[in-house]
Length: 386
Image (tube, rainbow, N blue to C red; front, side, top):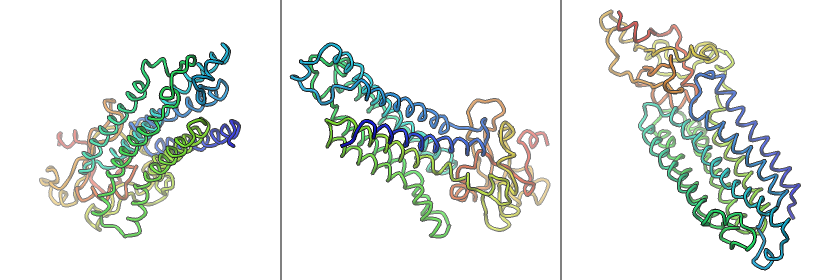
């Protein structure tokens, strides 16, 4: 039988692993783009850290004060004043833990959603990502409203004596509705990047690797279903639900953070020679855009977002008159950093042929773009002045 000590050990272990994953993600992002280049997914990573920490503390004190889970009308009537007050505190903490669960799970969904917002720039999937974000916000709202309307008035959720009823204590409906809403959101999130894998021209092996990476949300769904099944089987044992909740947290944290951590193992990040995106030879000058050296590291901080840059097609450099015209095949890449900050570049222009390769090769490194002397690079202000 599971004991409180066993649950505490597992919870602290999984919390430590989860924090390591989140902090590694933030470290990678700061290495890539600097603090000024952080985006909403990085903010929601911090939000997830806060709610997981709060939930861990809450679960610890639930074990101290206990709760009304397992009580009946008869047993609740026999509780003394000290027990009633202790269980009331525990029930309030249990209610707060449900709130933390909702906010933590959906904040981690926001992490991957805003990651895909950057990843799908200038692709039709970016509009899909926007609609999935709206849908995910709706599921979050439904879950939160349901949490406060399942048992009304809400004070019944921490009423101990007289017994408020199983609906207010066990909250069985939460274990059913929340997984449904969560899985719906996860399926929508998984639908964002996968269709493009059929269009890009890369080897089958790379498609399988990327497909596995982008479809890893299936592991979140599995963790959610397992938590639901085992929690419903053991409604009288709050420790079982606690165990599976922390396991679901860890799996979700790993899945949503893995794509952003991947650049940490890139040679470019550590200043080794290599390119971010490789195109057809001769199409973009030397056949690549990105860094030939330590581009990401030197692009940290405010310098990475000073002004818009234009990467001109080599065809536009053949004459002085044509160099002043925009390449008809170019597309604008909006920067992905905090909006409204003075000095942020609004848009970056790259050859249109690079859009799919940007998705496949460039991954999370777009905000730290660094253009070498391979291309003619100038600010839009200078081009207008010329």
